[in-house]
Amino acid sequence: MIDEEKIIELKKKAVEIRREIVTMVHRANSGHVGGSLGATDILVALYYHVMNHRPDQPDWENRDRFVLSKGHCTPVIYAVLADCGYFPKEDLKMFRRPGSHLQGHPHQPKTPGIEANTGTLGLGISTGLGMALGAKLRGQSHYYYIMCGDGEIQEGQAWEAAMFANKYKLDNVIGFVDRNYLQTDGNSEDIMPLDPLAPKWESFGWKVFTIDGHDYQQIIQTVEDAKQETQPVMIIANTTKGKGVSFMENEVSWHGTPPDKEAYENALKELTDGI
Image 1: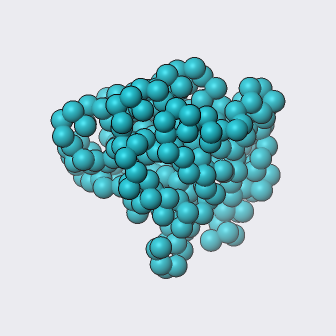
Image 2 (image 1 turned 135 degrees about the vertical axis):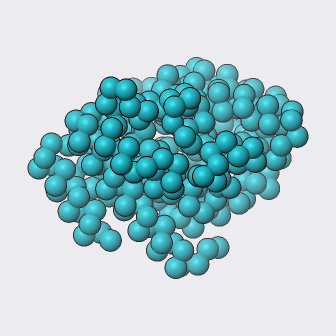
């Protein structure tokens, strides 16, 4: 249980991150705003309370690693990394600009704090699990946090990775499925049904928790519970795509549509009023 003062602090931070997300995507006139807003609370909980990391030493050996397998949602990870101090906030103005280190999908060699190149659906979880196995073989004790999109795990590669994690008993992995039920072409259950999702992961040898992905108490307590397990853990986090901006919430059209000037100003006003 964390105290209410900390919860309020995290919620305020999430508003700041969401403002950066809509600003980045509006300014670039390109990017994925809906999924980024929906994943914000989980990343804020991890980076501002859960993970051991040192922004001034992005290559610190004992740091926990975060891999954004749903790589198209770079606005949220860039906003968090900049706010933590991995690179100047000024750099966010170069999101998706030619030559910038802040491209549409994560680019590990150029961006401090990015642990793996992702974007090809299913690739991030495979990469993260391989990294986690390497850490175990080296006798290291840090954790790997991997976030997948629900539409993303329709890819067969994700389930090959799931078998791999069970084979090698990767108890240093805590995954999240960002379960918002929407993907670029519509509802995930209409396109390729995933439910019942928890039993699927369990049948592949994972311990599964299901939570509200916007509830900080649940996110943080579940991560603590996950650390007690002796098998890989998947946290199915029910989220709202577009969270925090009423006209974007649960609207598939905001999967990859940048807000125009009017929508941007209305989004900022809603987020500011929510503080």
